Amino acid sequence: MKKLITICAILLIVIAASANANSYVETFSSDNAGWLSVKNNSAVTDANYNSDGGNPGGYISCVLTANAPLVFGFEPTQVWGGGGNPETIWVSLMTSDILTVDFKTDGGTLAAQDGNTPMVRFYIGAGADYSNTYFVAKDAYSWNPNDDTVWHTHQIALLAENFECMQGSAAFEDVLAHLVDIGLQFGPSVGQHYTGVGTLGFVGNATLEMDNFGTICQFALAGDLNGDCKVDFADLKVLCEQWLQSPGLPSADIWPAGGDNTVNFHDLAVMANNWLIDCQANPSDPACVPKN
Image 1 (cartoon, one colour):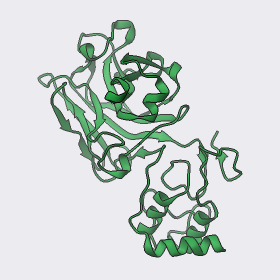
Image 2 (image 1 turned 180 degrees about the vertical axis):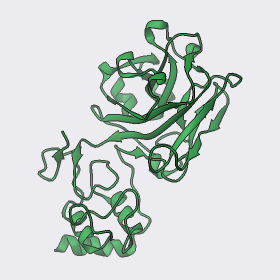
Image 3 (image 1 turned 30 degrees about the vertical axis):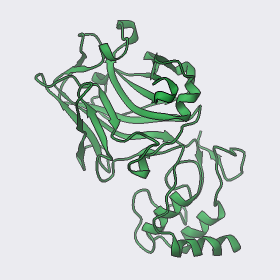
């Protein structure tokens, strides 16, 4: 009860509280969230935001035509961990986190700029303090975008053996802990002499579409509304914004099971019961239920 009273008091005074998270999925629910379509090394374009006609809740896209410049990938506008929208600040990721994305190619076919098989791969990078090191997913964890004529979910465990270093000398774990860049990179397969920036780029006539990019929590934790594996002020902020209203996205209507279409003290009590539980730091906590 004391915990509930404390959280209720916080509810009255903390409406704009927020917190950085190790796990976060960008759902593009209202805009492009500052993501870019990387056209070449020096020019970028805001990714197109689409509110419907694709994955529920919105998604982003980039149109590629025969006369368009090469498209190198999708990435956020801001240096992650260094500013911008708090929802897209990932100060660090953790080894074994699962990086996920929904992807689709619509209306045509693509090729790598050298005519070889195109591949979409996750990438992560650190800044100058870590020799500008960046890693890309190996072929086994990447995919041919021409196979994604409907939405497909692609995932990779953030383990060193699943990535290869394309630049720099920092350790994989150091890059995870000091992110500057993250996103999807377009190029040929490693077996077709992919060597980094010099071989990047897709050509063709198609629309590349992306949704739900981020890391997913491997535990079900009641009150963890944003899916970052812990219950804290970021979740309370979501609940505050939906207080005494119909639930939004993500939903704060967590009581009873399946919800009752309103966010109130019952939902707050569930959150209070698991307040400050962190399943990444303490996966053995009884409140942390493995999803698989």
